[in-house]
Image (tube, rainbow, N blue to C red; front, side, top):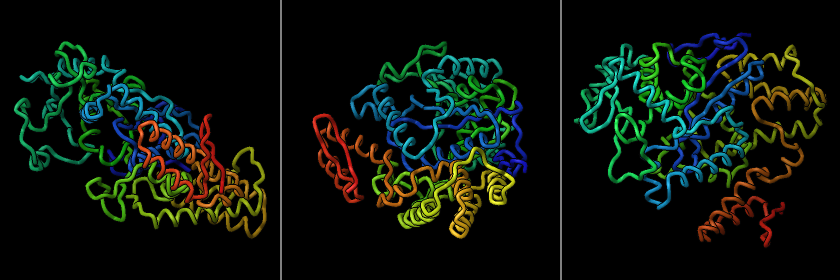
Length: 458
């Protein structure tokens, strides 16, 4: 089978072969680190975790870059609100992110650059854009990108310049020559902390959001690479602007395949703090084990909307237990490698080769589980476990998982213990008590001692 991937740029499925034989270079826009990760972030990182896992199964070496945005308006505001430094905030939130995604079995990227480490490269890009007449210095000190001077702007989003002008809903920034222009370098403001400012030939300031990713992906993967990914909400303007900056500066295509995952909805409504349907990963893991949340996400295709609800998570938990029941009833034989000529493996591989088709791949797992239950075949049980591993599933001890009540795994429990400890340090004893009670309701008893907190199943 040929691996085919849906390319947002061309709006069709295309056969995939990397530019460099055997080596895939992939960049995914990561987190802006100012708060805890929510389930929308988890969905994005899960989608590209599956992508990089399957590319490796297909025998490719993968250089996977997922950045951290550690300088941004939201970060500055949050740090000022909390009365801490930008560095302290971003270190705290980065550590929390790493805990959360590790609990979900999301593998770390090959490289995880931080925007603040690449400011010189950003300034180099801006210099080239200015030299090519695509950037200009505004009266207020900002440096902006001249959108109308870049041919082909809108090719990723499918928006024409006239459509974009017709859709304007905000007042034009007087510093811009055209309302569509966007900022490359933001001049320092008097009320901003010194750590949010860098020296430059354009005056002290900091980079715009879009130029950050252009500099990081170009520096680490080259002017043209294989896959650029991110959430559907980044398609415009962020990714459109990345294309304009990078291709405007280098004269080369930025990425051959643009891949976007679908939105998360909560009970069929857009997730929003104002609607009260906004959930962090940590909040969800207080009610459901990490593998249930992972399975819930994996069984929906990455490009489809994901409808989050307790009912859907309960269904996912029950379905996952059926797979584990097959493994528990017939202990899996260890496999050195997957025999892709096996009919179940063939169908699984064909599903994944068709734009990472996890719903059809999961359906094969259930067919295989039924066969395991009928035939009591340890080799088939081993195949079930090994195919599940390609999706980051079915690697817990089956009996222990089934006996674990809701199935909270050790990483999820450790995450909650860490959150409780942090709450106690902040003297938020009500939150610490709530976490203890939530774990107890799921059959996990905490025991505090001078040396730390331990736990056991009730």
